[in-house]
Amino acid sequence: MKSDKISEAVVRRLPVYLRYLNALHKREVATVSSQELGQRLDLNPAQIRKDLAYFGDFGRKGIGYDVSYLIEKIRHILKIDQQINVVLVGAGNLGQALSNYNAYLKDNMKIVAVFDAFPDKVGTKINTLVVQPMDELEATVKEKNIRIGIITVPDFEAQHVADRLIESGIGAILNFAPTTLKAPANIRIHATDFTTDLLSLAYYLEDGKEETQYDSE
Amino acid sequence: MKSDKISEAVVRRLPVYLRYLNALHKREVATVSSQELGQRLDLNPAQIRKDLAYFGDFGRKGIGYDVSYLIEKIRHILKIDQQINVVLVGAGNLGQALSNYNAYLKDNMKIVAVFDAFPDKVGTKINTLVVQPMDELEATVKEKNIRIGIITVPDFEAQHVADRLIESGIGAILNFAPTTLKAPANIRIHATDFTTDLLSLAYYLEDGKEETQYDSE
Image (cartoon, rainbow over all chains, first blue to last red):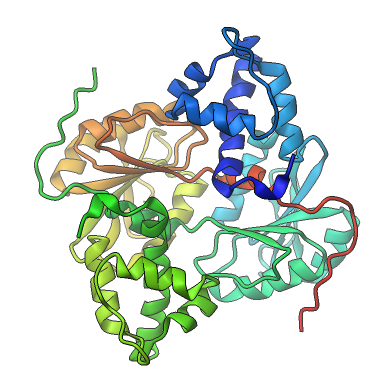
């Protein structure tokens, strides 16, 4: 397996597969076809087969994929078969909302610390985590072996926070601040910019004001 | 201009260009080169020139792009030179956080209504908007000519909310619920799934525990 040959688009689809496979596993479904995956996830079955073939010969013709085995393989590929600790910096509304997603993050990935620069926020509790002051950031990242940082601070603070996270030894950042972060090439940064998503959606709106032709039944 | 020929990746980069161009405009910078854009946005200048060339011959050799003109063009391409009204369904922490981004959404795109199914939430204020009950959804979407919906409800409610939004005449949805939504082909759905983003980041973590080689100076 040549991990550096796999496109980001494929890597981003793997957790989507995993989510549905986990749901199937919960319902005690043993096998699933690429057709069913495709229908449920609105993806071409051939695309799904191609994606999964990157990682080995998982499927069996006429039977489909073994759900448990595929879950195990994807978890391994995504490296979430080990515990990965995550830190969240910025305990505002967005930070609080994200920390609630811990429940979805089964898969050994977990937000284990929350930081905020505002004295009013420090010491308050978000779910089970107590918000820590920024001067404890570096020590906590090292102590808890934190590998991923989530940035939910205002845009003008984001680069400074990113620099501190990177210096503490973090390998990847999920950035929610509406600004482009600079980082060395070995640090992976994904931006989840709500405003960018929303503005790019407008492009796809149909012109004119005609009623949408859609029968919901 | 053949709008259906432009890849989603390009469309998604346009708001990123726009954000930086707006910042330049505010600082009264009149022209910008693709080199400078590339350096600031961590993109290959040739890529930027190619992206912008889709829409016409904007740049001038040795001078660069006229900032005001490029802003105007991108706004037109993204169709945000008209007012686009947005509705938010789900007034929890995430919904509240997103409604705070209205300030970033200059560009004639604006969240104009917020809905929630919980009686406790209805009637409360988020910024300047009063949270409305779900039974007013369809009428409000039509009345306020709302074209885009943001879904920040729990996953098990998301499809039902999407169906109602689509039936009300909405053309595009930004989905924050961790589930894949079904919609007719003429409805554009972008998913912003935090858990997917985060799980795919783990893939890029370097193996082993060695210290990151990075000099922040």
